[in-house]
Image (cartoon, rainbow, N blue to C red; front, side, top):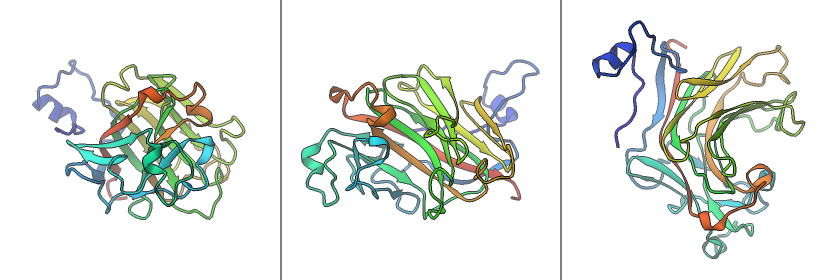
Length: 282
């Protein structure tokens, strides 16, 4: 399928995009940033192993937040590229996954992809164009974690570019977690934006991350801003390399607050592309 490229005002005019006289094209991706990494999901089959790894670490013990899914490894039913999109699909298929060696008695299967060990970045901008599931019990996320696994969470930091829960469709959340401010203490830095067509249309979920400011939003509309409050790591752990994660959780302390609708399965998050930009010359 055709990919949606970021256009300069001149390019937009050349392609016939309507712009009001004197209007300035807004973008959450700074114009002096260049593309440094991308997956356009152009080849059907399993996700590209040179770009994505499968996170299966907690299958046997059970996943965080009382989530109910099993995250599969190289299983096309749960993660595949199809017609130009990455499909992350959650399924109610206990009979099939119960035969897998690291099964932890979960009722649902899904996938959690990450660039850990493949690619990571310190500062820059991320844009992910995606369509979300809306089944009750679904909890898709586009987010980032640090590469350094010796630092415990939440001291390590977490950047949530997009979270959505199916029982509250069209409400997209942006959050940061640090030692000083996190959801365990109910002090996380968070905001939300209404995206009524989040489950029926593709939207661009965006992050811009600099040494002193993190901004997130959707379709070039800012939804969240956080300025560095101090030089303390407890306030700002965002000065090292972070990698990208894409996953579809099921149930859990947040996603499962209104239960899980088994009739809604399979559930899909569809991703058109993932693009990473950094400032020219950085």
